[in-house]
Length: 209
Length: 223
Image (tube, rainbow over all chains, first blue to last red; front, side):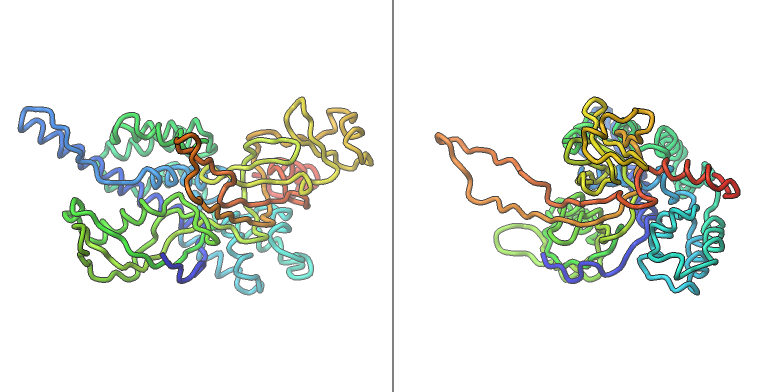
């Protein structure tokens, strides 16, 4: 292994959440398909087969996916109420204020709506920005859409209705608001019937240590 | 908080995976190797972002695997120094507070980085901050009326600034034997630790600042 570039680009929380959600949906769809094929084979041949038809996915990846999605979609972060156009409009609107790249990234990630939150992110806020602080806060506020409940699951429409309702159930059971261990298990349990029973809980226990 | 790293590696694809498209098999193999692991001086690997270059699969003498030389981009969790992030209190002790982000929980606030004057209350197992107090010693602080204390309880959501990061690469060394039985070595230190601070205006429990703002400035648009 060789690292060519340790930090070639910075990613915003929104981009990471979108990527992880895509992977998650992809995984669910594949597991469903694999399940269905297995069922059909069983019906056709009339006997129970034990062949492992589930696509090969590592437990590490599943764990970090579930936990990171939970963190990023918690209510303390604005990520779920962001949209690609909202974010790019915000960046364009921030351009005249001469902020550094990392300051802009933090504004996008945390979406401060109070002056005190902006103070923390931007050094020497008053000298640099002066009166335009309120304008910036308004711009940030307008870049956030009110999170409609369907927004989070909006991309799952291509799946079978069961997959969609499964996803809906898991995110309403605790996706927003908290990222407690309890919820982690709830989500994994929801996904469980497409996985091998018991496996998912096992790898969560390992990670709790 | 997250960034992309470009990494070069060689992966072996087992013959059982030859049925899948090569790129999917390679991504699955790389995720198995890297996801949820810490790379020294790089950060915590989340997942593969995409493949940039893939060489031709080669068969080596001795196994049936196809070996690919791959250059890929990976999503890395590594908040930069002075970045402000949101995290939750996992536990507290005399030395400081341990934080968790759900997927990463080797984040610490040492007692020195708490807003001063602060002290640890052993009964509540939590640190508290006494705003506008003259008390200096921990004894004086613990004698203060409980109603003045601002506790940082377990599970509370904090806004923290990243102050430092520590990577440890513990060499496994030769296996230790005791009476002919191999001793399992326990990893002593986490490979990647983040040191955070809340000793600043605006940092600390998110609720502190949203409440204060509401009291001082009613004209502010409340959520």
